[in-house]
Amino acid sequence: MCDLLSWSLENARKQTFSLVEDLRDEQMRLQSAAGENPPIWILGHLLLGDTYLLHLLNIRELNADFTELLSKYGPNAANRNFDSKQFLVERLSETGNLRGEAVRKMNDLNKPMPDETLAKTQPTIAHHLHMLIFHEGHHCGQLSSWRKLQSLSAVKGIFAT
Image: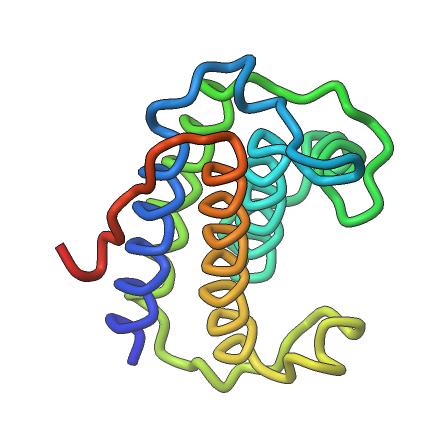
């Protein structure tokens, strides 16, 4: 199961990267409608999730960077001083590799979720990992929709090449 979860996380990330690969930094900040989160926010939001997962798995401690990410890319973020696409892609590559490696090595997916708030809907680490796969897929759908509204070409799915 760990190999399957790791594979799913890694391929969801590849899909995310394929959806922004051809975008310039200024395009990454465009909205199709008022109030919509632009692609750059989505990348930062995924990085926020990776950072927290690595903390939950005891791979990395949370630091001041987490607070900054939360202020820029959290669900109620008011700070619109986004990082560059290059910075976010590099960090997502790094955190994606770390999480994939950590998940492959796990031996107890039924470990209780240590975050009391998340545990209400995601009682185990396995639940959280499944949620992260769906979460990234959800944001890939948003990126695909955004691309269409920006009159950009569609991107092939990486799961059926």
